[in-house]
Length: 125
Image (cartoon, rainbow, N blue to C red; front, side):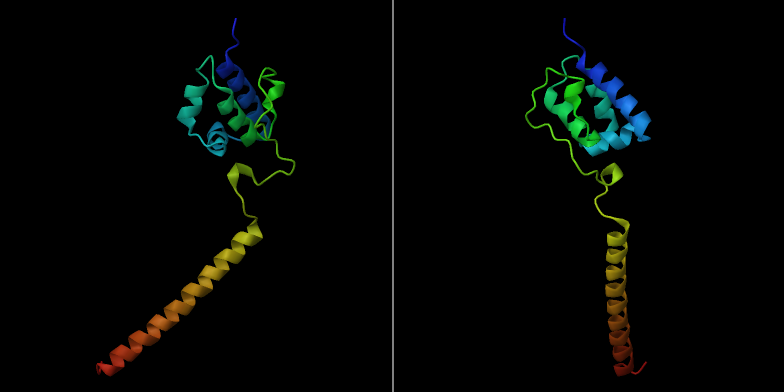
């Protein structure tokens, strides 16, 4: 008898999400799926292992502990945790980028206002 891979994945994901305080929606997005796709996946008795592996990578969890029959090719568990919910940049990097674009905006705005004043002056307004 075949184990229902979708139901096993669902149990594992729900337990993991509860422990980490992460929503299933956020985990599905981190795995590259949307929430409705997750619910379709868990209904499949013979859910392909490549899909299971994507959830494992998103969870940074080796799902071979739950699916021992799954081969170890392409199973990636990160050593260094990344920012949650797929965020890649740290807050200082984000702030630096915001400041860069703000300064660029102000520079262009000043140039625009200068050109506008010159145009109005040359038109006698």
